[in-house]
Image 1: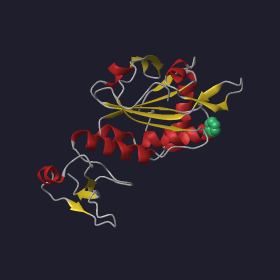
Image 2: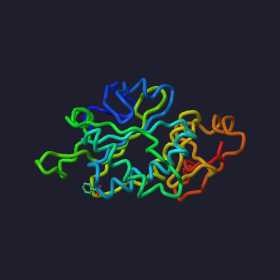
Image 3: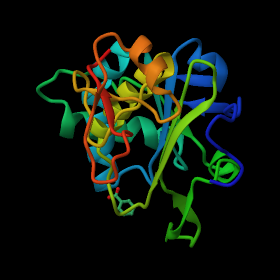
Image 4: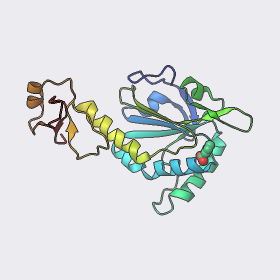
Length: 224
Ligand code: BEZ
């Protein structure tokens, strides 16, 4: 992702969306945000992904996260395809419209500016389409996490929700989350916190795992 690093303020772009014209920072307000891109409207993997995001939208809302999608398709296609997404994914959960807007980046301006094109995946005119990017932006408008998948690999939106839980927890507490962590599990104490400070910071207990090296760096504490 050329030019955009963790901790950078996310560009405050203007865009045409299925919910009208937006200014990105104004759209985010004080919320967290997830900007996620897909290669093309009316394609199978994208239909499953956007449907999964729709079905999880109440979970994102609970966490005060605003979702917004993007591809290089037109607003007309976004509106038409939304009906297919809902018909395929949301029959039983009763969604009547996509619970998040879609940006129409027909001129690829944002896709180029944010390094979101997939050079391996081209449209019928030989032009690259958008990859499957995920940018998670904090209430301070700074980039907290990014993912970049190729067109041929659909994302796991439960994992995206899981990383939001980790990002929101670690934004407020001096802890880190281990592999496959989920809310309720123990968290880890970062190496930068000395032993005495850790004991004071985590009154629920600091547990360290004995290791062959004798070093006490694998330190856990109950979910704070
Ligand atoms: C899909 O969404 O199914 C897809 C889109 C572009 C390339 C490959 C798959």
